[in-house]
Structure formats: structure tokens, C-alpha cells
Length: 352
Ligand SMILES: *[C@@H]1O[C@H](CO)[C@@H](O)[C@H](O)[C@H]1NC(C)=O
Ligand SMILES: *[C@@H]1O[C@H](CO)[C@@H](O)[C@H](O)[C@H]1NC(C)=O
Ligand SMILES: *[C@@H]1O[C@H](CO)[C@@H](O)[C@H](O)[C@H]1NC(C)=O
Ligand SMILES: *[C@@H]1O[C@H](CO)[C@@H](O)[C@H](O)[C@H]1NC(C)=O
Ligand SMILES: *[C@@H]1O[C@H](CO)[C@@H](O)[C@H](O)[C@H]1NC(C)=O
Image (spheres, rainbow, N blue to C red):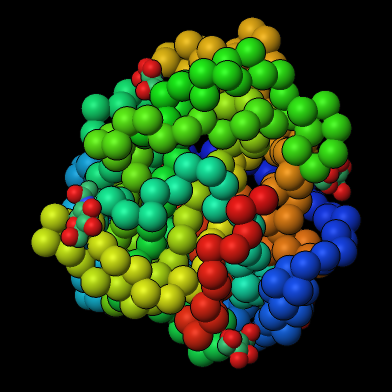
């Protein structure tokens, strides 16, 4: 027995979200469309996610590192073979050590992923088109497998650009290394919606673009990235930002120009998993480790974690995470599926 893909048993507690009343016309519109979102995608979503998990398992068990870039992983014949082996004999043994837990595939992924703030660290231009966004940042290997379902057809949505950005292992964003000079000693807000938060650090280093990148979904509606597990910073639950552009244009310098913006969201991780990673190098070097510490999901400022579950708490914004090897240090594979309305067009209005 070796190289077994061990499932992290990260049970996600049943989550209930307080209904926050929308205030601005834009928020009302967003909430209206969320409430209008269909629930009929569940079986499609379930199948979609299960196929992706099996595909990864296959690659790990056959001794190939499950790094992105192996196009054949998403060769349609891979799925055919697996589907066939499931029905009959053969092949089953190989996959039997992978927990096929259909109950884990959350029904709630068939609702629209809620729109939440893009925050202060987005760069309107310059995110490169690439799958490996880590550059020279050190940290725990993290593979992201981001699936997109079209809420209007219940089908995987190919060829939409998934644009992601997140903090490094000690909680900094590329291009934003320092607080504004007059805010060096700023303390986190003690009340109101911004409770726990400091002012965002200004962009002072133009050329940095680590842990930022965009990649289109393949014909299966999946975009994969390799990166490092993010670190935390003052006031925010640990998260990965995402934007989805159905129409975009690649520029000669390998960045892109996005057309309409179909989604702005944030993804999260299980608190228990984060607690384990807190103890690992270089995460132990987080500058606020011994003072404010990591903000728990439930305590997220601006209520972003709660809002990311949607007005009725129907959406699950937490990655489902598998270990890539026998121990956590070998890295993690994180899955999430978003329901997107391809025809929706958001302005970047909601900065929080
Ligand atoms: C998904 O949720 C809907 C609405 O709650 C329910 O009617 C449906 O049976 C669920 N489907 C599955 C596969 O759990
Ligand atoms: C890439 O090219 C676009 C269009 O010419 C330009 O606006 C942008 O600043 C360039 N970005 C980088 C990072 O060089
Ligand atoms: C994260 O980025 C900051 C700012 O650039 C840098 O000082 C720090 O060393 C980086 N963290 C790690 C673990 O490399
Ligand atoms: C988020 O929701 C949970 C459960 O309803 C609640 O306990 C928590 O206080 C909420 N967090 C914030 C920041 O409001
Ligand atoms: C998707 O967005 C379009 C354009 O805003 C809207 O007309 C339609 O009702 C939305 N569909 C769903 C399922 O929310």
C-alpha cells in the first residue's frame, strides 16, 4: 500500500447564515438574482465533481504527480474508462481507496455563487494568463480545481476566464508590501462592519504579480491552477479571490482584457485545516501570529464569509480538500464548483 490519496476528513459544519438586508439598489439586484437562482442542477453538479475527483485519483495512483499541465488528465476518454470500470469489473480496485462520498458533493453548488467584494488588492490590468501562479513564493503546494456550471443550462461552462489572486504564506499581496506611511501604526477597527480590519496596503511595487493569474475553463468547465496555500492577514478569514470573465481577449504581453464580468467571489478553507497549516513553515512566520492571530471564518470582517454562503445560506464557498500524498506536507488538492450566470454582468461596484 502506497501513494494513497487520503481524504482529509474535514467535515463542514452545517451552516446557517443570518439574512443580511440589502441596502443599495445594486445589492438588492444581486440578492434578487440570487434568490431567483435555480436549484435544478444538483445531479449535474454531482456527476461533474465526482468525475474530476476520479480523474485526479487516477493520476496520483498511477504515480504521476498531479500537477496541472497534464492535458491528458482531462482527455474525455479518461472519464469514459472510469465510467465503464465503475459499471463492470476491472479498474475498480485501483480506485477503491478513494472515498467516493456523494453526500459530500454539496447540492448547494447548484445555486449561484454569491457576489462579494473584490477587496482592495485587485489589479485591473496585468494578471498573467497562466496556471502556475506561485513564482518563487514558498509555502505548501496547493492545486486548485475550479469548476464552473452555467446556472441557466446546468452544464459545465467551457472557455470562461477564471481570474484568481491571493495572499502569500505570510499574508501579503503581490505589489502591496507595506501599509501607507501614515497608517503604519493603525489599529484594526473595533466596531462596525469593518471591525477587525485595517486599511488595505497601497500598491507600491508595480511589477510584482506572484499569486495572481487567470486561466480559461477547459471543455469540461474546469480551470486548474498550482499555487501555495495562502496565508492570513489582519481581520480577514483566509481566502482566495476569484473573478469570472465570459469574454476576454489575450494581450500580446500575456495579460488579458476582460469584457463583461459574470462573477466576483471569494473561496475559503476549513478552519481545522488552516489550524494545521498555521504550524508549518513558512506560515509560522506570519507577522501577526503572536498578536492578532488568524481570523476564524465565523469572525470574518465585513461579514464576507457569511455573505459568501448566499442570502439563504445555500452556497458552499469552502474548498473540498484532499491530501496529495500520505501527509499534509505533500500538498493539497482543493475542489470547488461555482454556479455562474453567464449572461449576468457585474460592474466592479462592490468594494466592501
Ligand atoms: C437538492 O436540493 C433541493 C432543494 O433543497 C432538493 O429538492 C433536492 O432533492 C436536492 N437534491 C439532491 C440530489 O440532494
Ligand atoms: C500589457 O499590455 C496592455 C495593453 O497594451 C497594457 O495596457 C498593460 O499595461 C500591459 N501590462 C503589463 C503588465 O505589461
Ligand atoms: C510575502 O510577501 C512579503 C512582501 O513582499 C515578503 O516580505 C514575505 O517574505 C513573503 N512571505 C514569504 C513566506 O515569502
Ligand atoms: C456568521 O454567522 C454565524 C452563524 O450564524 C454567526 O455565529 C457569526 O457571528 C456570523 N459572523 C459575523 C461576523 O457576523
Ligand atoms: C441571468 O442573468 C440575466 C441577465 O441579467 C437574467 O435575465 C437572468 O434572469 C439570469 N438568470 C438566472 C437564472 O438568474
